[in-house]
Image (cartoon, rainbow, N blue to C red; front, side, top):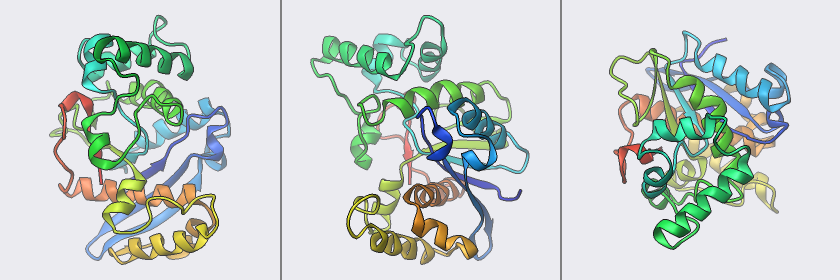
Length: 266
């Protein structure tokens, strides 16, 4: 394997391997070169436990410098304050403990009840979500990714001395930096389709447009062009890699909210 950048289109489904795609890339003087693109099923297994364990092992490899993961890393500050001692580490401990929520549904229910009690609104977004047009981290469409991403992936990386999950952890001494990305926001930054490139009429033509926009940013996709056109999940992993490469170059934004709320990098 090769590549110092990983872009990951994540899945928290029971058969996560089928929808979890990884793009591996190398930063060169000419831009970004795509070295590989694959489904987790084909490398680590179809079930969620195998796919997530394989992903963590790949992130921890010596040749990986920067990783972009497509799921919310944490919660709005008001929920962190009410449930997690105000911190991201408290959030990881909550979802990963025996006394924490047992599954994504329970996680979402507790978050909604807590939000309604604390601020009078059930579905809250972080400042970075509002800035990037992302969803509430515990809404039905996202809750499985947030829950399993935090418990199965970030929870296993947070205590590694060679890895920093930014902006919550200091990356000055880290060999590998892990950042939150959101492909729709990346495509929006590029001025192309945020929506309509997945399972809709005309989706392939829109994927073609988005892919061309990525290539125009000095990204060489090589033999993987057909894969990105055939699969929107694969294309999202490419967008994740593009944002991860920019974050590695010091182009990442500062948090729009608190540091503990995290930041979507584009």
